[in-house]
Length: 418
Image (tube, rainbow, N blue to C red; front, side, top):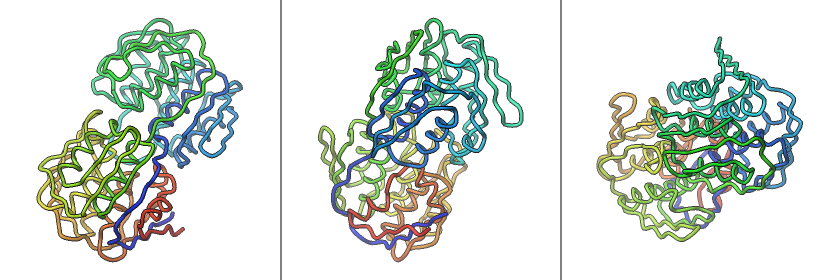
């Protein structure tokens, strides 16, 4: 278990290229199961979560090759339909293999997924949707066995616009018999990217980017080459880090439209931002003013994956900000660690808290309990007085490629100790 050692107080200045999206790459990697062909995926991030997804693909019988950020997956010789518990427990996104395995092989066995501890994060929406499509599912002692004679298209209305459930239903529906209509589906850019890949494979999908998605099942899918979209959460994290530490950053390979709610917040706090077609520049004095209220929402709202980093930024901005987390019931593990660093934060239950900005944070030893919380603690360390040590680097490595090298490039004093 590694630790980041940060000497705070350094302005950030320079340009960074944003990697491919973690949250788009993982479901697309799972989707390669569907066509039994050779797929080429470009702009894939080299992070531990994609490594886990590749380990799952290899375990079930896929052949994989990688060169720089290009992955080649041959799914023609899959021989297993059980995904072992030790792989599933490494990341929650492993549940996304349920849809494509069930669609192609009519059976799959896996286990309740692991990943960040952010509350219950139930997979009930996934399971109920598959049952409605004709699957039989047995659950016992954390093991999930799914099987069917065939999947049938149907209308599925989600109680909540879950990203994972929307993706999993799409993955199952593309080879199902008949038409599936998802109502109240999630609209995240990563879902649109999955749909674009599937359409290249021959899938019939309508309503991309809306809350109602229509999938007409086809008998077979073909090979495809696809470039993963830029990671909007990585982009947002580096913007927030620069806003907190002060300085000027230009991000390349980014879609500003995908992070427009965050751009709006940072602008209101006092950052100067310029947007271009595929790049964005932010300038910050490091002396910002809190906005009164931040609420996480499904896209196009403020993403839950950016809330911890914004919490760290609000800790050093003038005034009060009230946060409401509406996606995950327990995404507050970073708050006690920020308080160790001198942040003034009052928790009002599991999902609401108020941040009162302080003049400076102080360097401390803190512990990353989840991926985005780890990024928040690094953010705090960059603008704190003295030395900050962020333990448990493995969480951060799940979602950020070469974060030490990137931050060092733009002037941060940060090292990784193993």
